[in-house]
Length: 194
Image (cartoon, rainbow, N blue to C red):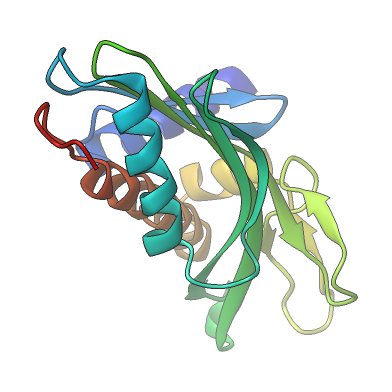
């Protein structure tokens, strides 16, 4: 049953986002991946420089910390934070979730690069991060406050809970916007020698 619900979420996300980004659920957490093909004459070095500039443009604050920076391998990875809002259980205000993630960009010499976004974790009130496979969205009603895991939110959304659907859609939109921003900032041409 859980697999069917996860499949329904993935199908809905792929139609909702209308992108070529592949989304899988791995260990109860989403894993986004997209491979982009530009002009085949673009070198790994050009893509690497473009990716570095993308990180500067997209990640404008110190919350984003580079984890891997390897020009020879054509690999960049960073930790980042995204924030999204959604309505609450029983329509009692709005909730804001702060989600940490890892983004990884791998470049090849033939004008191809891969963007992966994964390792999502939700910030707790004490500023610790817990994997979203354990804690994703707020489902408390003011008397019985609690958070649901990512897959529990899929189940709640599937059963018609508007706040759960909104949380999942807003989360997906933020991740997709991040991927699109990186892609848009990485468009280089073969004759770009900077």
